[in-house]
Amino acid sequence: MYSHQVKFSLLVVLFISFGLEDLYSQTYSDLWSDEQEQKINKMVERWDNQTKPGAAVLVMNSGKPVYKKCFGLADVENKIPIKPSTIFPLADLSSHFTAVATFVLIDKGLLSLDTPITKYLSDMPDFVSKVSIKDLLQHSSGIDDFNRLNVLAGGQQDEVLTQDIALKLLRSQKNILFQPGSRTQDSAGNMLLLAEVIDSVSNKGFARFMREDIFEPLGMFNTLSIENIDQHIENAALSYTSENDVLLRKRTASCIFGVNSIYSCLNDLVKWEQHLNSPTLLTLESVKKLNELIEFDYQGKTIKSTGTTLGQIGYHWESGAHKSWMRGNSGGFSSSVTKVVHKGFSSYVLANTGEAYTGWVTVRAALITLPDFFVGPTMIDYSKITTLQLDNKELESYCGDYWNEKSGFRRKIVLENDTLRYTRPNGDSTPLLPIENNRFQMMTPGDNWYFLKFSEGKNPYFHYGSREFPEYYKFDAYQPIALNDSKLHTYEGSYIDSIFNVVYDLKIEKDQLTLKNYRLGDVPLTYVQGDTFSSDTQYFTNLKFERNQLGNITGIHLMHNGKENHLLYKASRSND
Image (cartoon, rainbow, N blue to C red; front, side, top):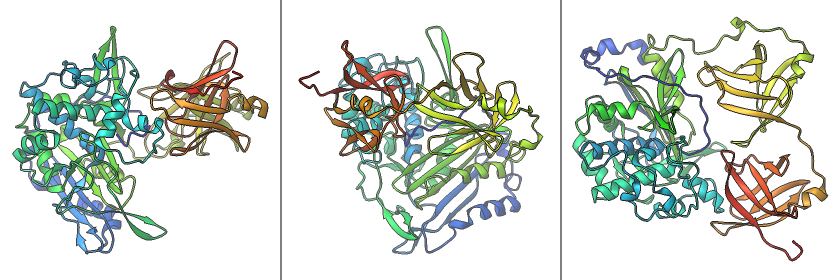
């Protein structure tokens, strides 16, 4: 997604229907008004500055561009303005193009959804033998994310990876995260391997295939897949960031085929969207598959995605209706798209300002363009919700520390000023509104409905979820205790990664156990229970120590989805 950060949105199912011909017979005046134009202008006016970087904004309605404007500078030093032909990296949006390219090959009869990927990629580990093309598309392969593997190998979160390094990391895996087809989990590794399959099947290489078989036939002559981060691109925007009101240049962060290597411009994105509405390179049936939410069977059980499609687009509830969305960031660039497929609506923002998130513009553009579709309020009016009257003694019964073993998330439920609050380790908290027995609604800004449902009796826990997915996360209560120094000392030592031979030192610093690596940095650990610790560092949120029969610490399991996945074994000592 992915800057593949753990992103979590509770997403819902949308039935996608086609047959847009009647919509597209409308006149321009039916699709857009001066009032809508002014609302969009007002929303993006902060970018309208010819001394700073800015953004390119596109809104399409019923398959027609109704708003296409550019603001700010593509090159601040040389005063070159952003234009509809200015080229930006699409970052994570690249994976949608990779999915479409896969279906182009399928429709040509050169590829099959059910074919094992080892037919095309013979140098992958044996455990990948059951992974199919469809598993890569729907993120059900169980193949790890190369970004996560890089951090486990001692790399940094924002490190620039080459194609070769990313592939080497994927091939280094000793086991799969879960059985292929048993569940879904976003992984940039899936899209990289799809690009490798496209390379193998086309005999052209990914970049050349995308140019010759996808972009040029559509007249998208300003769209390309770069082949390295130093590649010179004519008419490309430069990226910037601001530190202490000083504008600084930023460098492209990554170039991984299939994941974040596609560059494009507004003019070409118009052609892209129009082709998806009236496809010539692939069939309408394939376009439909690309827009359907993932649903598959595993051991007689139907598994539904919470919001991902084969086209790598997610669905989300918004003001009484559903939209699809995708976001990406790369080295100071931000790319965003929001779609309502069956309305022929799409909105893009491509920015070089260093902002991490510009997706709110594309969402607001959808609300402005389709007011009769998004009929719900943009904000929940909590004053109109019927609540239970609970005294502080009743509210205190829910307070405590809670732990989600699969994710490693820690949460506190606290009572402040007669209000129960859901509190995160960073201190952010959300008020809870009692609406039913043991059930609370989170008072989040906007129109998202999230709930906590508490258990009764022994072994207390609560489920965190939405109306559509009420049991999305389970948090079990636990009693945190502070371990004394003698207890903490039993965990100290040097630990070696069993795959990458990277050394981690575990030391006590400021009365806290800290995992140390010269590249990754310090990872302070918080004791949970038993031999389990947690941290706020991504990929190290759940650590479980391993003991031998004598009770001595022999290693650390970095847990993934509640299962032992990655082992750091303790360097032996003579007295062990």
